[in-house]
Image (cartoon, rainbow, N blue to C red; front, side, top):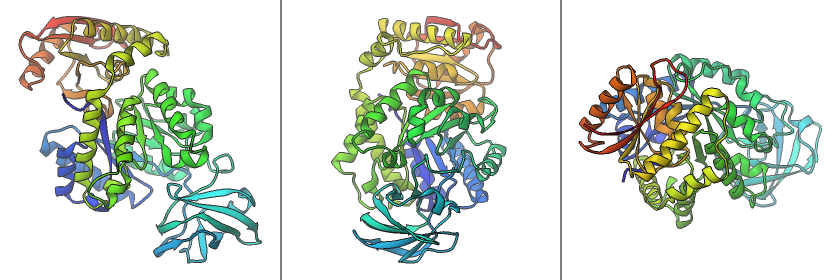
Length: 475
């Protein structure tokens, strides 16, 4: 069985050379994440083209996702790592200079007006927690409640309902333009609070534009979840900042809720943050981390994401290979029949317009038919990838082969659960195209002569919905 759950890996100093990147692709990296919060945009553009060249040489499609910084509040640069202990007191001062051991500079000019005595702030992924104990004329005095080491330019989490910053920021839009000009496949939007934030990005629909991935990391985003999902191409459960906004006991349940709603509405769902954190330095994950990855797969996540594990870890390719093994085994134990029946029984598949309603109906019928006749594959012919994402929500046991003439669609499908993207020259009439894709699938080793497959596509090259299902034998 081929792995169905996709792997997103963050690119950083530990994996900037071509040899390591090639090893990561071969180990199972499906999507490369460029974190635009760090480094110059020119460096990221160079890395984007480097990734494309390596993927072409390996012969595997690779998606590239640019993650916009958003209204992220960051501390000034620490010249060397600093250990914070419980009950240490520090000053937080608005400004852009370097941070000192007893005075941290905060890149947010409204810090003194927006943050109040009694507020709880978190550094980085939330492992270091500060309580604001006094409001001074030019700074805030804070006490360390949970300690740890700070280094570089870590983020400072301020409750989102206090921040006056909007998403996307002017800097986000500048970075966005640069990445779109270089044909990036996906754009991750940070600190989304409403559907309006997603609409403000103003990108063309796929495949002319990149897929917009809305990061759910604020309480407001959870409250406005369905509207955000509807406006987005995919969703990321960003558990670091979300875990600081919500109680820790709520986080696992929010993860399940977000993934369930996202998939019901036909969008890929990404689970992120600290999935194999110990592998930054260790050769193997903890048992809890392995269980976390497997449980994300059982929750139905489309992709699992690695951050610091690959960006600054000791062995990025080994981390990807470890993640791939855990995800594959979880895929093998996934309850495919139960998942699809739940979607059908609970009426979770929701229609969002005429074309969407046609596609929803046809994909549900395809899932049922493929299940009844034990089809060897579900073949989807799609220009935008919408058909593939629509059938993937049912988590069919049959492999999904996604054919498209659009290069960007092929790369975007690297993030879709269970999908094997395959490039074709063009979409002709249904009969001609079906014959061509079946011959291609057979030549690539995905099908054999006599295999029964479900073929899903449009009745013409221009129709806006998936309206044709054929059950055929591979010639």
